[in-house]
Length: 391
Image 1 (tube, rainbow, N blue to C red):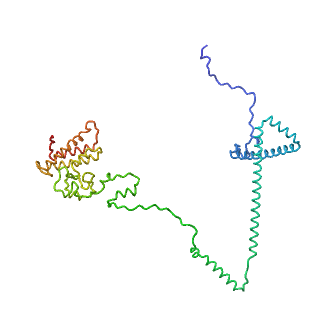
Image 2: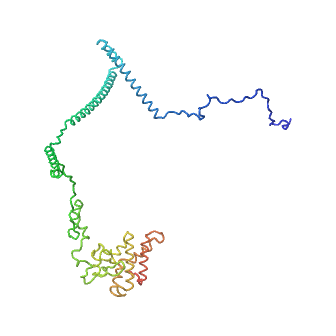
Image 3: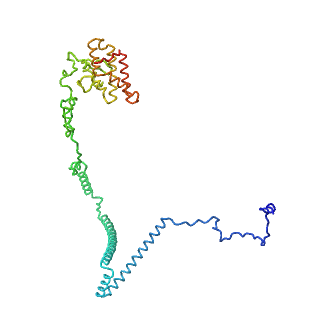
């Protein structure tokens, strides 16, 4: 037989029903959830607060029941002991000690004494509170009676007795005048005045005083070590004529000539008259004279601080430009040659070239210092570019 002759899906066949279907009955009153037609609210578990409150009430009742039961047992035990003879009590005590041990019996007796002490304390506290309440009630009643007696004891004068009323009014005025604020202020006050400690006032120091540094150390730093030689550079020169750049000198060495930051030459009189606010004063051989010598600028150019090297390179470049242009004398003149000898002795051009060539290939070095060194070399070339001669 082939599969096509017996298909898997057949037609639906209805079977005849043996019973007739019945009509469903409407819901009865007992099955309806509520009379209004709305569903009844679900009964949820009580809150934790209610449960805690209920458990606290149950614990209080259980404590009360326990206390009453303990009191009943205690009364029964005391009545039983009262009926016993001393010999029976002694035998019972020996049996307890033999069976339980002396240590356990002692602990039980201590615990019983502690509980009795607590009960006595609670009773005392309650009795004390009752006594205090009764005392308060009695005090209040006594105050009320006293107030009524004072009201009944008031004295009233007759309306025709003017002399007594005038006398009483005058006595009241005298009493009020005796207790007036003026008289109260005249009395000495018993309360002491508030005292605040004041720090000791430091003496005023005069910076122009020759002993200013010593006074400063003694006043503010008495415990620190003191070396006056290290503070000598802060003192003004005692003799201005002893300065190596004094206007009273008839001749000066070329290495002691001083220059400004623009490279201009500063005569001794101008150098001593310039204010310190220009930044040209420093703590070298002549601290009271403004300006830098070529030797001092060469020392500053060897500094490890790049900013100091930049200032030295810039000033040296401007000096070399003015020197090449002939502002300090023409070529083959005595001052011109002497200044070039100072430049060659301090190796100024060698320092500028070394700074300009430092870090060109590797990319390291300080760029600002290198830029100022290149600028100084450019000014040297613009001024004439005299070659460095070998010693």
